[in-house]
Length: 472
Image 1 (cartoon, helix red, strand yellow):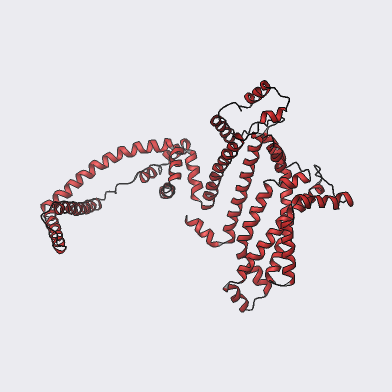
Image 2: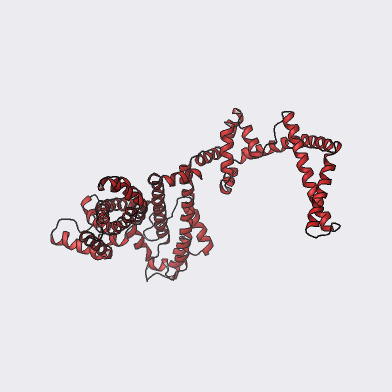
């Protein structure tokens, strides 16, 4: 137990941020351990000084220290004469004194170590070694766990490379969320638009505007409002919106499912269309098939989402009455057209990236070797090429899915989908600061989580990343 705990402690203390976190989370254990360590260290130092004096006296009596001084003087004299320097200068005396002190210290320390070894005494331990030795006692360990449980949770997290990586990314996500709040609030605060005037209307009196600003804290200084927003974020209380006085957190949670559902449908459509086309165009480059599909992909990237959405509504709703023109809650078919429009843009970008990533891999030497061994083209593509081309493909797919999950405002507006994107856009024009801050915090967290999932997927796609992660 002691060795394992010692290993975990030493590894965690090797990183400054972990060191600070461990001390803060395990303050009772560290304070009690440090007091005991100082007491033991005082006793060890007293014993060490006695042994040191004994070793020094023995070195003087057998003439070892005199020989060290003579040898140091002889060596330094020859050195100075070789370089044409004077041996009676202050520089010579200073360097000789330093050399003698270092050589004597080395000799005395060597004798001290011999005495420790001969008498079976343990070497002086560091604070971490001493603390881990104390925690080897089951009663002290149990008491330490009760008083410093968060410290042991952090040690368990840091012991596994995957949990440590996830934990560090989640901590970074917190800083990202606070940074987003700072930037967005600063921009909205110094904007010329007045939320009170926009919400109350042109007929609002100065007294009504002043009352509105007082109720929502808009009459306070910038720094006070910023700190209040930070407090709200830390306590998961995003406040109430200016228009409608609805709870922002509840509104986001209510609108999140429809955005998530539409994003999943769009991503499935994109993956089903784009990946096979990207593979086929990479296998048959510079052919008519390649040119046609890449031209279609370029057209798909160039189509404005709002125009394409209106064409879809005109074609499948107004003219043919096949699909609903706008989103209807509970009707899955009403999400098909928004997902198709969003998925078309995703598919076009994903197909081009799949093609370029696979083309790069197919030009590698190991692919030529695999083909020279007589492996079929399908096996070469599926088993050897596609796996190594997946990292850039997964990267692009993850970024696109995160962006879609953050809310496709234009598509949601065209199809009247009451999702996150349309919610933030509606609140932007007031500006409804709590609602906007809640929306952008949601987007930042969603994109950070998707990027974390993509990074973890890298580990399973590339063994080199896995080994590098374990070595950190």
